Image (cartoon, rainbow, N blue to C red; front, side, top):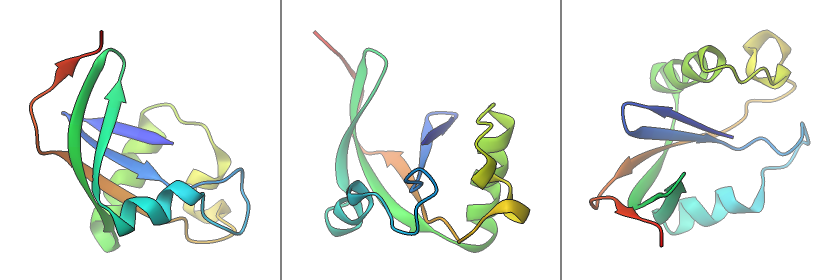
Length: 96
């Protein structure tokens, strides 16, 4: 799941409630410079894992953005889902 706030993104590694992370998450941590497309706009970004109060802030944004996924409620989490903060490092370009 992705969450956007003022041009910055977070990606939460939820894999249908499973006990393992999606494969993309390990790839992002191993090679944090990624290309992300949101609608018709593609940009290059750099990702890093978030924790503590920064992670809690992105969890709140996820809930407020209408993601009704039950695992996003900390009191309902069966595990601590990791999240990556993703910030643009290149100007946007439109998709063809």
